[in-house]
Image (cartoon, rainbow, N blue to C red; front, side):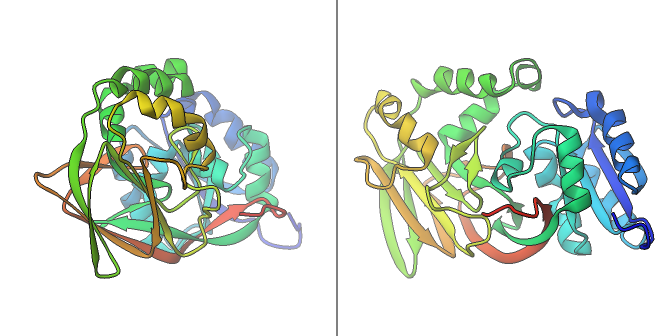
Length: 299
């Protein structure tokens, strides 16, 4: 940091319930102070408090640094949008999919270095029924995984907890009927999973689409329309890499707005948290917030 400039004041908000929140807090504060920041620190056990915390510090800081996982970051979005304060990310959660998308290092010293020397980059947000999301919003199989995945399992097993829970619920998956409306056209389907991505990664490193970026001003939808749950096992490697576009039983669409209808309300998962339900309208909000990313990063 240029010593001739006044030191930047940053708000560091850490979710103590995130997988590595309490463990790396002291290290993060030490690193940030060594890099020349004035650190205002807030701890929370309830991520729902994050927007109000950010609004409270609106005129006192230059950057908001969130320490936690994707659920913690998702909970902070309203405060970031309202204040337009830039976001710095310390990946202290289990999956850290937004950090993966933005090529932010998982190690705390390197992540702090990005906050100190990185560049500001405008990214898009997804919006479903007035709930923002960074990575993906989905209904069907992923909701069942979220409902079964415990905090204790995530803290103990990390990414392996996602995989183990997915296999437990996969064989119980049952198709449901839905209607997708895009560009004035209605597509009626029978599916076990609909996912609509804004970013590139979700679910612990899976890829929304091979060409998805978080600044392309569009959403990527896929629907799994296979008859038997074990068909998913056959396409898992392609789903992981985002190369599922032309696979049988997989429907893919791109657009700036989708509407999803189901016969009865079905829960919707946004960035790993169940926040709303169908019927649902999904939109992309272009260049909604600014994030500190590696200076040489390409998305």
